[in-house]
Length: 134
Image (cartoon, rainbow, N blue to C red; front, side, top):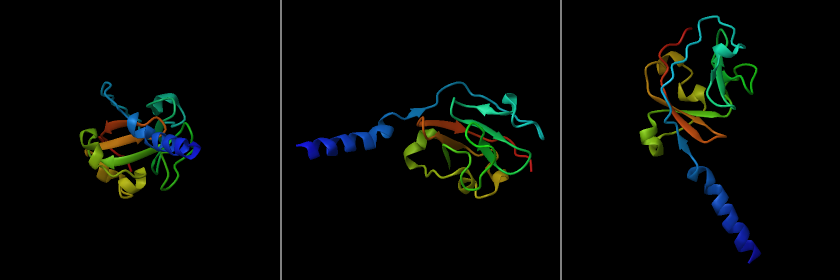
């Protein structure tokens, strides 16, 4: 009986994230970080939630300055995963880290619909980059 309880608890807990996902339905927000702006200042960070603050230094990729001091290849932004597409087709999307998703070519993501998944909070957000400075 005890093993059955643990198995049931494991099954329920392993499916918990799928049951508690949130699709962001808040207002559209446009965030702009000027070229060469100090990425350590709050006004140059897209503070999406208390756990995810996206920014970029003067070069390389984006990162979560809440938990990372700089961009880390094939990892940043921490606590996120990305896919091309829209939340309306969430079940068909394939998520990966940001660098892999954009094919190590950030300018190629400009003007394309993407979904950002905030992993710890299980929030999905439709997102579109409107520009990228090299």
